[in-house]
Image (cartoon, rainbow, N blue to C red; front, side):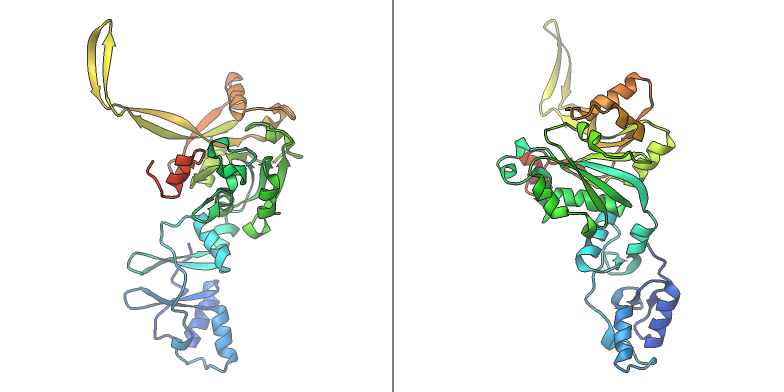
Length: 346
């Protein structure tokens, strides 16, 4: 978020003040606030240029040039959401306001992308048939199913771009043409997209053998049917800081038995537990891998990625768990899709 002190002015400010703000702030927007610091309007450098070209003097008030209908977000909005909004509206700055409309920050495109660009790659597995989501997937690849008006895969790509991942490989097979037609080379999503073409199902690990070159840095592998807001930067840092060969994203899964449980041994009751809860750590389908592991992927062969992780463990190599505390959902069944769309409870 950007420092507000240089790009904020009051409602009685003049054109001269707005121009000075643009000059010293380094951003292309002026934020106008009232006495309670509520955001009442914005001015872009384009607004001010047009005003001057129309003959407006430097001492003129800003009222007639102020944009009072503007886009803003809350401080709960994630990078991917903000980047998505910027791309959809063709803007490069978005103010942040609290529930009372008070200005609390400013997102800029440069801050989101320029300072966080990473050399890490991401491989997204988007070639599955989605059998459990038929008949939807009879005419649509599972990652292209929409949630809140946007394909699941597009949400994942925007999330990665929001964390500076701009080299993305999509492993495609089933209805690959539809995926490729939508994303093309990735330019309109702020990244470069390449395609790994499976001529037959290769599992979650096999598509990695199709990479024509090896990445220089640890790379991400994700399932293509995930809805998640996981912290990409923190997961990569964890992997590199711990000097791991492989990192698996995990999340706690709690299942509550809906009945009282009776512990019995040889016909005698040893105890009673009322609706006990059991907790497991589940694999989220998100990995970070060292590039050298690509040499262990058999070519053109069905190969599950967990097999590679197991091999690392058997060799005594460092395999780490990264706890994903943010929202995560595997949209693999009709009920999952209804939950994602707000049509059902978990």
